[in-house]
Image 1 (cartoon, rainbow, N blue to C red):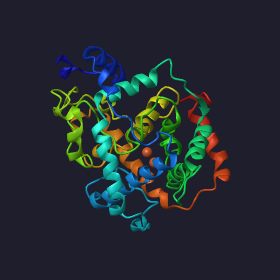
Image 2: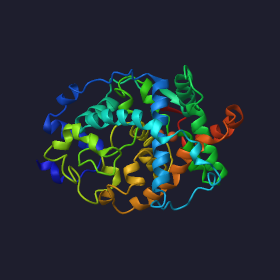
Image 3: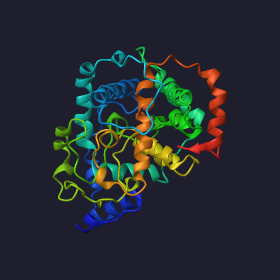
Image 4: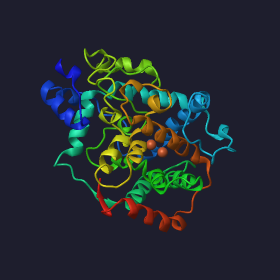
Length: 341
Ligand SMILES: [Fe+2]
Ligand SMILES: [Fe+2]
């Protein structure tokens, strides 16, 4: 297949080209819809927390290997064993990844992008703060346990960055990095939890052994595809991280929303787009796709990660007290107050 050696410039443009040449789109229709309601906010919140728990514990095991440019200070005296136990989360998380890894195919990805850009999709218009409140309200509604709500996680993450003296754009990135989870409540943006949360990875090339539960990719038809199943698949070594088609989820969705509606720097967009890409930023997989300049993005994503993972044990932030500070910060990087989601 000629696409083997494509040098792609824009993942979604490529996607459109690919789907029109392969006619592969029909196979997305065969993907079973998740039995879980896409709008199951609390359900999502809890699987998302369990996914984070696994990453917290895996991080403790592998922390010697990672060398973030600028180590976090805020979490130095934290008892990280206070996070819920790894094993408890394991069973649920494994079941989640069995489904995610089987269904995240190139075909699904192309269809999701097509839906995202479809002129028929009703794109709600909201300010960033309204989006934060919306996510919070929907997830908080029937949250039965004591886990922190989304707004608290976002504010804790931003506040930890602020306390460590990180730049204002990075604080804002902390505040908004999970807003992509709003896709759960927007028509046609996702099919279930499996294409909203969880670790991410590129599609269109061989799934790396360093992804979590790599054996579960055997159920993904792309694993056996003549091109997608090869090491570099539809990409070329050194093609650049921007050009990878990342698995569909809240990271990618928010990146697509933000990329032409804010003035945040490239590092911030990388933190949003790759914050769940643990196989890359923690495990060192997919490095051969990096191009010049991607090292800087990798360091940025690695520097951001502890604030996402470890700020959850901080005291609950006082939303109304913090709101004026963050409203001003949002205005600084969003020239149009109301953005299209
Ligand atoms: Fe996230
Ligand atoms: Fe997060």
